Length: 189
Ligand code: 5GP
Image (cartoon, rainbow, N blue to C red):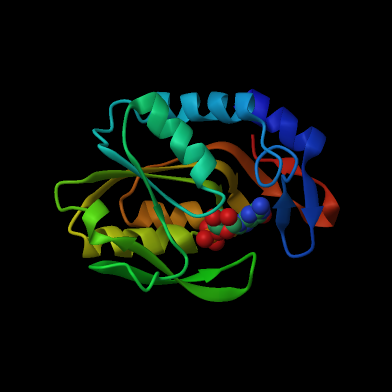
């Protein structure tokens, strides 16, 4: 998506260890117009997917997910990264966070994930695919089905796409980064 790629080149910043910081339009300060345009693009790509629910992970996935849900007219559920003591019938998966270099327990209440659900997972970044694999586990525990995964930014050099596609899941992303080597952002196409 041209608009996002241009914005990444203008405002994105590279950090040690292959991290792209997009704090002034996605992850801290947010640009609602760009967020809406990105959500429209994901909604268009997944229009025929048969999704009946959007799933994301707190915190940074919530903004794009709620916009996709708004446009597609679907409810949005976010997986939490800490199991609340009051949550009943909790579905969990252990996930390794690449940016924070620690593990966390991703969880969703079984009240919001049912066997008839057809899930579209939406997140800000696809890196190694660890969060996505956790989501696959959660959705399987709920007996539901995944119809696709949509990301704003894909770091192609970390190969999360291969992991997800090997599970037979459709992946869409709006900007693919080929490399952040030497502090230079190189787009994949
Ligand atoms: P994965 O689970 O695919 O390895 O990593 C995806 C998750 O880690 C995303 O939910 C995102 O929040 C975070 N993440 C991974 N790489 C980056 C990055 O380069 N920049 C930012 N801002 N977040 C990232």
